[in-house]
Length: 400
Image (cartoon, rainbow, N blue to C red; front, side, top):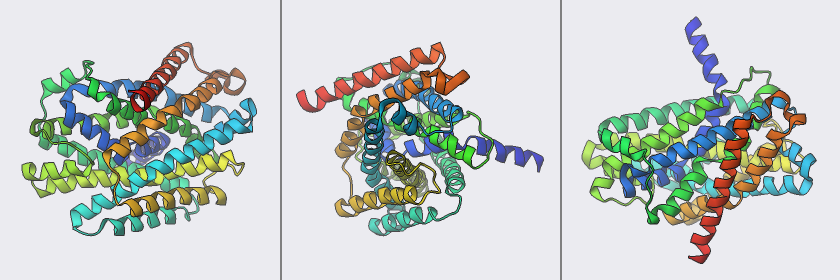
């Protein structure tokens, strides 16, 4: 019993990091990672290491900001740069999360519909209704934390089993961590970095830490574990796609197509198991992504960010309703639209990252938890990377 209590306590301590990993690893991310493996085999595994390295630095930064102050990060930005800056970031994050919410809704619908032979729209409506119903729990944060831990566990089991069945090349995996570049991979690489090195997710880590503090729970900075799990799941999906899809020359337009490719090789159960992983990724992002967008919009307009606040819950529900509506109207999101949406976010995130970086460097706010020299250097390089990707993306989309 004592050991089980210790395990439960450990999992709860990992909560904020796990939530961040779960909301970042959605169906759009699964589609992009599957496409990387399908098109380029194992050769793009190195980009996971790069993206996770910077994601670790900024998520740790967000956690320390949350531990160092009673005021939210947007409140600190409002004090430092004015109301306009806070509103712009809050609105920007709301629009970004809403644009991805349609993909989360479709992912949930496809995962169940493909396995059961039922209409996608039915599950889109049902799981968005369940997501909104969760908002009525008195302690929404505790429900969110437990749900994300359970869904991440489901994803890990599903993807690890798929990896075992795929029997990938160990030498191919090793070579994949040696950097290589293909000109036709540029848009996919930008989309992957934009989704995996998620400044919005790192930014929200400070809010999750503060939410735990308000509930009187023990709070420590254990964000690293959740982000490493994010990197591990990303690498596993690339490896599975490289082992199953790449040799057959199969092109991926949605994450569910990976399950179709598994069926003739390993049987119906393997295909359904991958769909279980897709469901976990979709439903965790559906709830987590909406929570980020609604919380930051509420904070930007002065309603606070506490998940118990009525207006914050209303904004969270609004993100879900908008996403479900887009999903029901269009029926599906083509891969090109997913990649475009992911890559366009790269234009917004350098500004969010810079604001976060400056707050974390401020000794008056941070005290002993301010950025170390090492993190200042890594953070500055990360911001330069985001700016370079934004410039590269602008050239690819509008000039080339």
